[in-house]
Image (cartoon, rainbow, N blue to C red; front, side):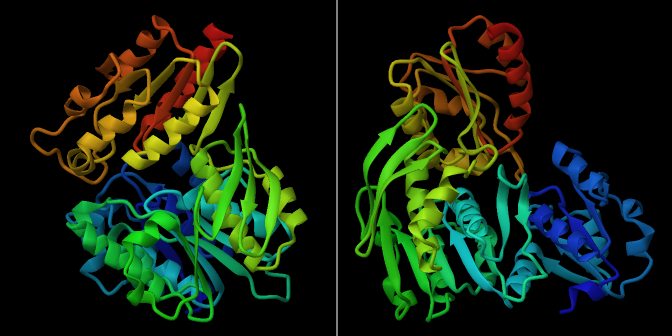
Amino acid sequence: MNWKSLHSVYFLGIGGIGMSALARWFRHLGVPVYGYDKTPTAFTQQLQGEGMTINFEDVVDAIPTAVSSDTKNRLIIWTPAIPKDSLQLNFFKSRDYLLKKRSEVLGMITSQMTTVAVAGTHGKTTTSSMIAHLLKHAGINTAAFLGGVTQNYDSNLILHDEAKNEAPIVVVEADEFDRSFLQLHPNISVVTSLDADHLDIYEKVEEMTKSFGKFLAQTNKKGQAFIQNNAMTKLDRSQFEGLATLEYGLTQGSIHAANIRAGLASFTFDYLSQKIELKDIELKVPGFHNVENALAAISVALYFGLKPKEIRDGLNVYKGVKRRFEIIHQSEDMVYIDDYAHHPEEIRAFLSSVKAMYPIKKLTVIFQPHLYSRTRDFATEFSESLSIADEVILMEIYPARELPIEGVSSTMLLDGIACKEKQVLTNGAILDHLKKSTVEVLVTLGAGDIDRMVEPITNWIRDERI
């Protein structure tokens, strides 16, 4: 499809991280972009500032006349996060519009490029952004559609240089939700993790695992797959027979790390594979899990021919992704870190790394569970992972696309949390509690709207703690 021939593109759920990257892509092509989202956010304000027209009321009259007046050459892109009874969605479905899911459009865009697709129940945003940064920093013509805002480029979209006479490499985050990643046919695939999740979609863990196998099977047989070693044990290799694979892991696998040292703002490690050894790699995005993500990123960079010095130089200036181990404040008196972790294994990896960095300081965690179904399905695991902290403050569940489930609330996690200091607080009561407490290392965790707490907490630290 000649995207530039479109009259306009309309996004249902334009404020989503994946949707907004596509919106920016079409805006870059010069196509007028319009969209709807449920509520205005700082992110939608940015998109409006970039020239996109956005409405926030799910009524047909809110659709701009430029889109609603004719169906010809109007592309409507929607996300499964939009409710099935959405008035705007059903308006477009009832007429002769070209209607595509986000994943379909991403698959169409990347089908003509050399594609690196990074999948995994966690770790894919950091890993994909790290790969894109290493390639871009080394001068390789690179584009990327990311599931987070990379700090180096202040965007979830990295654009390639169209003036260069070389085909770009595109790095994409391959999302397992709604089986979206099955729209991709990459040259290089990465699987960072494979833990039970999205059981509202898959129902059984086995079905989710099969989908990952199908994703790998769609990788070009002349390409390469890099698969985290624990994820490999859960996969059926016969699904992707004939595909070259390499396993990596923090401490084991044909690619692994050694001599890992945790610092206050960085981790240092050695990269070891059967072909090469890179000593004293410094990663300024802390965390054992980020070291493992870096193993995958380095491996992909080496596959594309980057030299050891180019990799070191790239990682040395890699700043990470917003809300992924983002150190907001650090002093001798207090540390504040914000992170997107919303799965028990992500929380376990994150808090274990924070404990390694600050072993003798009190760790206070504010966590907002994401989805009623996920809280119900993994209640025991959430409680166990949060028990790493010295104090746990729970916010109420962020529902996202779901309606409440009877008997499911944040309170159900309390009994299983081992630490003595634990409670559920409303958003408005959290700051008052912090002001009366001993706070040494504070972290905010979650994928909902807990990010709205970052500014008031930061202001409190600045005004009262410094």
